[in-house]
Image (cartoon, rainbow, N blue to C red; front, side, top):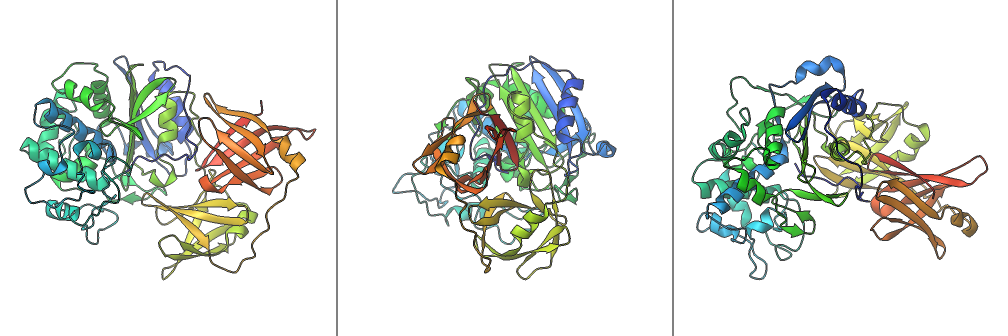
Length: 543
């Protein structure tokens, strides 16, 4: 369920004005990104601007379009956290608390809570993911990973607090925590004196006209969408104990979420409007956050953003108060392992952000297949064999069966039988990979006796040919310079990083998992570069 920044070189979005669009124009943009995508995903997308709403319902394969519609409720995952924040802001507005309250004051007497050298966890630390609590509670038992939170009850959640030892003062370190957000959900319901489903209906859904949003009790006229993994297979819905469901348990239709965004933009004043405004105010700087909203700079403005993901669904919600514009994307497929919905979502926020292309199933290059074959150990201990099988890879985790891998146009391998990604990582001494599953990105280290390749040598005169400025998107580019006997690359507003050559005109930045490939014209002059990172490629011409 976490919101994940997929690019280590974070792009600062700039320029590009938003315009109201028709349903047809929106459908065209979504189709460019989705049609033919190997995930077989379906999406419901809305753009809200100055009170008008454009909508489209599309699938990667048009024959699947009956899977979704205006009556379909999607799991919105972690976007639910912003709703819990609104309810907290509502209680604060009623004089029933403060962001500076210690968390302990909102929990049952006697609940054991960690502190750091006497410094307690405050509510403001929960809504900015700086509490120091880990991602998950310790007493989940042995959960079914297709429905991981279903067996977690309130008693086990609160008991898990006593197992935590903080390693830093609350408020000093960002660590996205579903654990902390579940505790907040419980605490808000407890302080309000009712259950979370009733609280959401009475204080948020009803005032905003979100008639079909719910936690457990679906309205009769609503059909629940079936979730899917990125290889097109149906998967289980996720379930939460009612008072813990503010972490990620809300289900809603596209129109429900469009009304939620309109409420954030003050399209119509309601009883919850003051709380929504309060929840939008900046609470922390590192990273910039309001109450459970990420704050993203866009062309001198601030856009509120949150993404969500469960085992079979993904969501993206943003709003730009200055431009009076918002974006909603709901998908019946989880995109967690393949970079989330950010590419399409941010492009709809501001057209200067690259739209991206569908991930298409394609053959892998034989050289890459051979380079990846070997024995590996994943961080955390699991060993994995990678073998070539014809024109494909197969993997065998230690003690398990073998799994055939597909390959897509973004450069990722993926098991055809379950949801994960094997992302090749090229280093100066050869290939390894990152294993991505259940929201975790785990590096793999080669442990076989494969011969280590010597570093590729580049003459100093050749290095100087690459020097220059390479704009990638408005407001962000790469500055390439020679420092000493090394080539460095510096993103706008970021530190310079050394790069290592792996072949002629190809360099890697192992620290951030990026590859840079320089292009030459017919005369041999360097004219452009392409940055490949996290399944995305950006190209910039040399200035």
